[in-house]
Image (cartoon, rainbow, N blue to C red; front, side, top):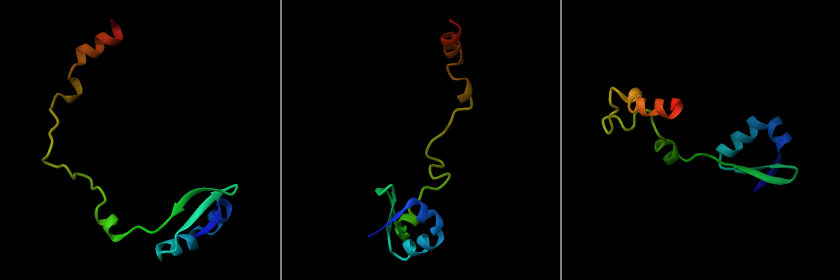
Amino acid sequence: MQKINIHEAKTHLSRLVEEAAQGNAFIIAKAGKPMVKVSSISEVELQNKEKLGFMSGEISVPDNFDSIAAESIMNLFEG
C-alpha cells in the first residue's frame, strides 16, 4: 500500500481520491508516521448510511419537552 506524506497528499488530493475510488487505497503520513488510511466506499456502505427521519413514527417528543422539570432545574441554579 502506498504511503504519502501529508504535504504531497494536499498537493495531489484530487488524483489520489480518484485512485482510491478505483480501489487503490493509500496511507497519509505525517513526519513518516502513518495517520490515516484512505479507501473507497462500497455500494453497501452507501446504501446503509443513516438518513434524516429514519425513526419517523418510532418515537414521540412531548409538547412540553422544553419545560419538563423546569422548576427543578431553576432550583438547581438559583437555590
